Amino acid sequence: MAKWAILLSTYDIVYDIRTAIKSQALADFVVDFSRSQMTATEEEFQRVVSRADVNPWTLHIDGASNLNGTGLGLVLKLPQGNIIAYSICCGFKTTNNEAEYEAIILGLTTAKDMKVTHIDVKCDSLDCQSCQWFLDVTKQLTNYFDIFNIQQIPRESNIQVDALAGLGVIFNGLRLNNIPIVHIIKPVVERLAYEMKVLALN
Image 1 (cartoon, rainbow, N blue to C red):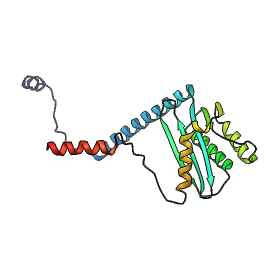
Image 2 (image 1 turned 45 degrees about the horizontal axis):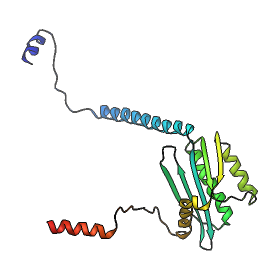
Image 3 (image 1 turned 90 degrees about the vertical axis):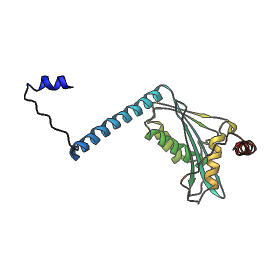
Image 4 (image 1 turned 120 degrees about the vertical axis):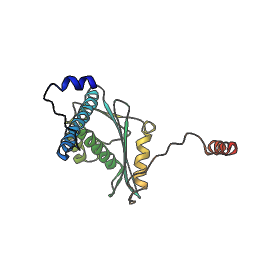
């Protein structure tokens, strides 16, 4: 450092100590950083969508209606294997078949808003003779997808959305923002035995 100082002293170089960064410079940095982060987020979203073009998204739907109310179940499976699940409480009464149409219309609208272009729909029952209006809306929504397939599957293959639709009925009228699902790996006996062993060692 001393040698460099001697060499540079022959030139008219003035060294000023840098004080605190001005607020404008900090603001500019935040703006630039935010812009780069937004670009990265958009690129990641486009990668997800482009992969979705190659492999289909899968939408499982179900609707349930009884004296307690109406509930809908949606499970949207991404090509990468991720799952988006919804249990929906409806503040109105419908028939079971109308509930099925409510579910498929809501599911297709959700997929459309996510820019999905290739989707396979799975449902255990969908009576096309129910209501012309529901049928027309469903057909109109299918036009937003480059590839659209619908398949009727056995009820036992649709148990996840069946359970979600049932939850929608059961919790109808209750103001619940979310219902956490807790995964327990071991039974309580094993957990307590381990805790007792740890306490004994201490």
